[in-house]
Image 1 (cartoon, rainbow, N blue to C red):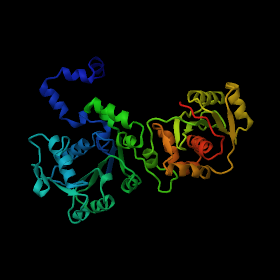
Image 2: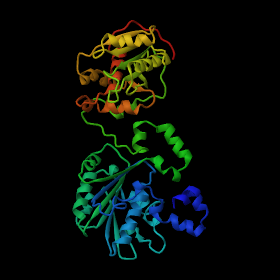
Image 3: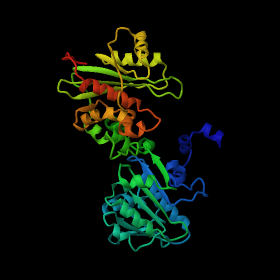
Image 4: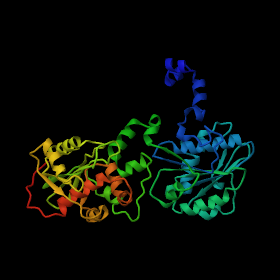
Length: 432
């Protein structure tokens, strides 16, 4: 087989087959599905599971995975089974789960396709298996029926998702191993926080790009250009669950709302450096952030130039490169750990740079509070997307309390503090 695949790659093999043979292969879901689209026990029948969460980006193949799972479960049951199909609305259930291009009617062949009765919200298979359609707007409608299987689509969009889930758990009481699949694009909502913390939950994840073979290239390119790296893109395209702690100083929503495509003319630009104590493999990163302030007092984060596991000479060179790249007015560096050595290292690379040391006298969270207030006022704009920096900002409290240093966030706090919260002479205004 390996020798055959080396001679004929999979796509080349398909060209050697007849149309009927190709159609047969394409209709066999396990042969065409990605691993993340297959149920937990597909590769290991010994795995026992009750809940499977498939969290993925738009167009990543969640609906197809759900419909194919239901189809396979009906086929292998050996007796009629009862199924619950739940969507945010009845329209969603009908247009996506049942009648959609990847829905239940589409994935079945003509000889096995269930009968769909929209007026009864009911699918009936030739063997007597039945699937009832429910709207999440009516969670109490799940009180009474009982099921072997359930498929919840877009659970993160359901208004009463937690109540729906609770009612469904009580209803899954038929057969020896009742199970549920929840397919969804993630969102920072309580039901996902709850499910992700459930012991024994099986989690599958996928990105929109993972399904590129079945999506138009123009769509993928447009989505990447418009949303790549943004919080919305990471959630809707990469399928990342980005939760905002209610008590967090920094909000992803606030960062996104003020994001800018470009910076205006800036009155002052600084490069802030949070140098690591050591440079071995386990060292903290060297936080390097470029930011500027406009004449109207709005601040612009220009670049996250942070580097990891860098020697002093290397991080100093990176900071100075950013200084020249942005025609900055000054490099500022925290010197709590390195003292005068920090300036010495920087001047060894370029003695001509303007430099100022800063020293922390308060904890990281306290230092960040005035900067967080600037974000709340809509005065801070990220020019583009800085995913790693934004992750650190939105998890600053947890990182500050752990052994992992938020180096990027520290550098950003120093930069914006120097620009907006420290008195300076009236600066010259110049275009970048």
